[in-house]
Length: 102
Image: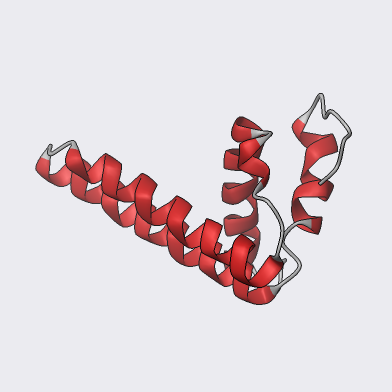
């Protein structure tokens, strides 16, 4: 893990991508983010707040499995929670648009 302290998301994102070089890890992130969005939709549709917990659980569980079993690194969210959360969504969008290999 990098010992550098990032002061902007622009500086952080290349590091974030470097922590996601294994396609299986990126695919698990994509799955977790998709499940998180589905749960957000359920929260909005039903008004049941439990869906928020399900969404967070699904998203982080998928991501952490990818890091621990395939990438063999520690998730960046432990050190940079906000930047890591933003990085998940930027990477998700790049994967949707074909700018990052799925």
